[in-house]
Length: 300
Image 1 (cartoon, rainbow, N blue to C red):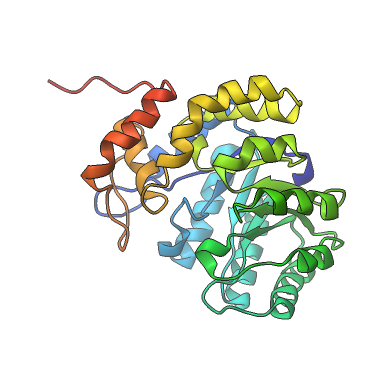
Image 2 (image 1 turned 180 degrees about the horizontal axis):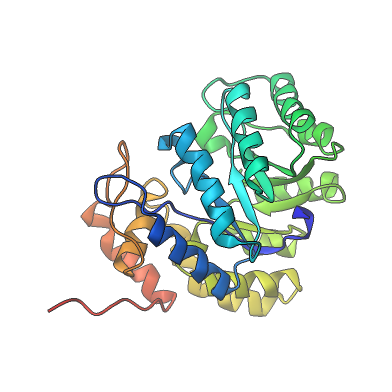
């Protein structure tokens, strides 16, 4: 049950070869690393997984592959949202058939639908596909804000079980918990706010930072959920620069660069995104050092 998933959920990158093709062997190793590190669940084919440049076929195949690799050892949440309702229905049904534990459904981007359109969009998905569904509100990317009133209308549907809030607004997050926390699991989509929001009643975080520091994010989340504010803050202080500098350019540019420096993936990324600008490398390295991330020795 998705409502029982608590703590650090990684929005996992999609490793790619230098030519942009998917590197499934590296993906498999990342999934295993997260299982070993205490990550609570994996979001596959989300924003950090470069969903915008995955074809529909690649999205569906990658979700099915992740389910097979996870083999029920860790829950798999499939990114199946779209600004086309029919496309979202197709991918969400594909995720259900593949055995995903839930789907993550971003608000329709670019179209800028009214609240009634958003309500009908999410209701169509919930009525049609019998899989636990997580609403995803990230207005900074989509130019579309899912209002609290609309979330409240959707929260009673049995297939709508959670929301990822990436508004970056602490007060709004607290209000979301007050209004809907008894009916929905509420996940932070902002790494820098994950700790205070979990202390305020959020269920966990769907995290970019967890890609490079999974054990620390899992530890911080566990402490925050237990109400151990001081200990959670001490762990989070090691992560604070990662929370900042992994967004110094568009996600997932910095996090894929960091994972490449760690020797976990190749440098591949798809246009229109490109590799991290060299002028930002020292800042990302500084953040990694603060988090005590081991880097391989350079080859001689």
